[in-house]
Every structure is written in structure tokens, then in C-alpha cells.
Image (cartoon, rainbow, N blue to C red; front, top):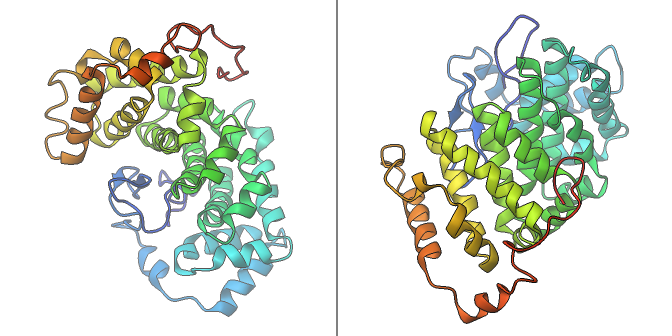
Length: 353
């Protein structure tokens, strides 16, 4: 666990799901602020030995109780956040403990006034990120995940995702908030995707994909990838010209940026988004004309030289776009239904129909 002090530049709680760092999972963040392949990697941090020390159930119960008191809450948030990966049922304990979730939500909304104008301090960011880490714990657990979305808890995080300040407190706040959403979509559950489709998560993710840090862009693109992986998510994005064009435009800009500042991890998620879009006949037809040329040549050969999976996905994407339309897809490409010919639908405040 990484903790920010008012004068520290160390990132807040890791916005990745416990134990994940594999090629297909949610990107993890190490103590240096760089992507890592192990969500528990915090080399050089003096807190590591303390984090690995077993903690008693009684101690956990005391910390949960201390959440209810304003005088002990900050320390309890920090300790529970640091130990959350060592207590397998912490999410269940938090959800079923009197007032605990209400306290976590209070910590979230208490910093709303510091969003506009952007006056959030590092200490405030650290405290709310500890609360967000515990909410991510609840979002990750199979026994509490459904209850989490039924209570609309993710909506409380959206004001953080909508911030634009590039200062470290705000960047860590966005990154940790993205980690909560990433923990939800990581399980590939249609129920989660259907919930998110009723919210503004897609335009919020697209905004961060354009203007966030590399870490934030990577997690936001991972979220979009997971939404697209579900049939309901793919159909939703390809349903109107406005939705598809917004996604395609952002992905295209990101690819061009990759030419200047390449990141293999981020490029992998971009390519997987394109590949999944190509599974939709109408989107595939549109991509034939709007896929960036640098994905069709050898521009990224060096970046992907050690990533066989991503090279395979890119090759499959090119094959999908080169394949002639099937009779079924030709029927779906009638002017009245084609993505290319649809009139833009009224956009939401964040730019999605």
C-alpha cells in the first residue's frame, strides 16, 4: 500500500484488483507510479513488511468500528486500506457492518466542494483514496459486487472522473476511481456492463483516454475494452453514429499519439478495442475507412516485438477488415441502418448519444 503525505509524491492506494497483473487484466500501478505486472509490487517501500504481517480478526473489527468516529476514522481508513488484500472477506465485513459503507460514501462526497475550483490537497486526496480502495474491495468481491451496483455506488465516483486538473492529488483521485470501475468490469459480468451502460462511464472514460496520464489512459481504455467485450456493450456503442464515431475518433487520436509516445501496455488495449469493434459488421465497414494507417504498416513493430498476443490481435484486426462483407453483413449495411449513414442522435452532456 502506498500512502500520500502532504509532502509526499508517492501514489495512493493501488487502483488495481488484488493479485492481478496479467496480460488480459486490469493494469496495476507500482509504487513508482509505473505500470507493473504485479499488483503487490512496491519495491523499496518501508511499509511492505508491515503489509505482509498477518492481522487478527479482532484488529480488523476494531478498525471497522473506528470508522464510525471522526477522531479515529482517518487512521482506520489507512490501516484497512493497507491490509485489504490480506483479509479475503473484508468486503463482506464492511458491507454488513453498521454504517461502514455510509462512512465511505461520506468520505467521497466530503471532497466534492474541493473539485470546483480545484483546491484538493494531497492529504485530502490520500484520505479519500483510502476510502476508494475499500470501495474497490467491495466492488471486487463476488458476494458484494451486485449489491454494490444495485446501490448505485459507482455514480458517487463520477464527479472525480469528470475532473480536469492535472495536479497529482487529482490525478491519483481519478486513477483510484478508475480502479473501482475496473474492478467491476474485470469479471466480465453482463449485469455489471448493463448497469454501466445506463450511466456516463463511456464518455467519462473517453475523456480520460484523451487527456489523462498514461496510467489513467490505460485503465480507462481497459474499461472500454471490457465494455466492448460484452455483446450488450458492443451493440450499444455500434447502435448510433454518434456513439461509434466518438469512440473511433478517440481511439484514432490515441494511436497517433502512440507514434510520438509509444506504450506497449496502452497500445495493447487500444488494439483490442479495435479488434472487438471489427466483430460488428457495421463497425467493421466503417473501420475500413477510418483505421489509422500506422496500424496497417510496420510502425509499431518495435513496440510490439516482445508481445506476441498483441501482434496476433493486430493481425486478426487487419484480416477482419480485409475480408469481403458477407451476405448477412451486406444486408445490415442498408442506408437506413448503416453506421456510416446514420444521422447523429442527440448527444448527452458528455458527448454520447
